[in-house]
Image (cartoon, rainbow, N blue to C red; front, side):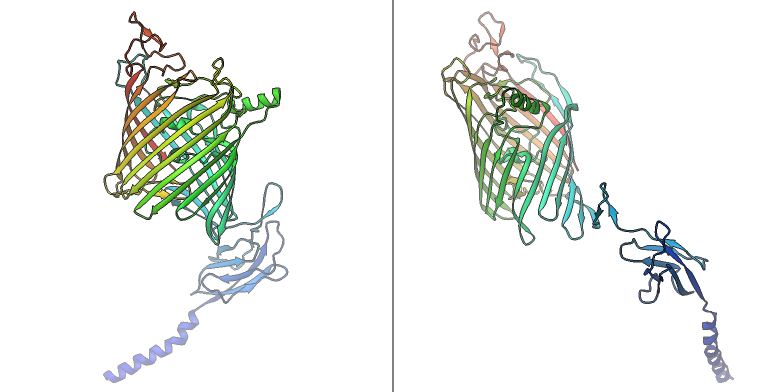
Length: 538
């Protein structure tokens, strides 16, 4: 009996197979494919999603017919070159007309343009868009710095107000197109005034897919001084050194850069400044009224890195610049060195040579020495300036004046981070943090500048500044900075006669260094300051 039941069950299963197939239903879906203007589109490949081989093709009238079964997808894909693919869900429809949209696009001038798919990702915290073939790329380089300053020293000759400000509010877009070409647009909105920063066109020289140099034309920083060419994102202190006010920054020009494994060369010619409205106005006015040439500067920088690997680097560099008078200066053939002392909130310029007139040429020279080993770094520079002309300053008969400045600094990432070096720019770049939550950096810097030339009867003042810094690197985008600085000015640092530097014989405050009764080394305003910054780069 049991054998009979088993045999009967097997026979029933075998009999159900054809009946099961009979229940599988097939339906035909048909329709027309039209373009955006309602015209028939022939040659469109029509297939069921998940099945690449079977399908149909629209005829000259744009019509198609395709069979679908219950066990297939309910989605039909329509595709043809020069059109965007389209997926349509059938549901209970037997007749389906669809429209395809051309993937050909036109620019604002009616010209057909070629399209490349791009991908977006964050690279070290910066949003970057890049094509699949890596020939096109652009990325944002924005930043906001919120600064605070407190001046605890109240026993000063010239009162100082505490305060806060937006030190920088930058919007920049950089690009690399057709592999070899690049460019940048960079604007600063701090202080409610727009200022033009980097604006240039760039061509890269390549060996295969590897860059080995570039040429740049536009408005950008000259190749002079390690600290000055380093972007503010990676400068270790809230403010750059006093010496940086002697070094050239952004000018219109053309520069050539080439690098190797252990060396870097930058050389170029630059012209007038154009970052601020006054720079442009001065240049246009001198051209219009007197037809004066804009002037030029020849600048070169050479860097050697005899030791350089993932853990350590030794950097030795130097730079030289020969500069003729430029028309973007307020006074033609005039040079002026002036600076606020380590703070953008204290607006007093204690160090100020005033306008030195009758300058025919200026030469600058710079020496750089830097080293890093894992989480320790050292960096120092010296800059000298020589002014040559006829009767410098007027009524002196002097034909030459010299000034100098220097700084030295050390840093330590105390939780095991690492200092990274950029050989293409000859500078330290974004640090690697030692912990998942970030890293803390301890810093010390000594600053020195001397803008006095007693033979030339130029008294711009001199100063020493000592700064202790603590930085908290939260991630690639966010950083907190805290600096304490103590500034010691000499008796000649009177802000071109506007600031008190001591007392006269009657005990009254005086701005005249010839009347000050303070002993040598005691004149001038000395004070401490505490500054903090909240920074975001994106």
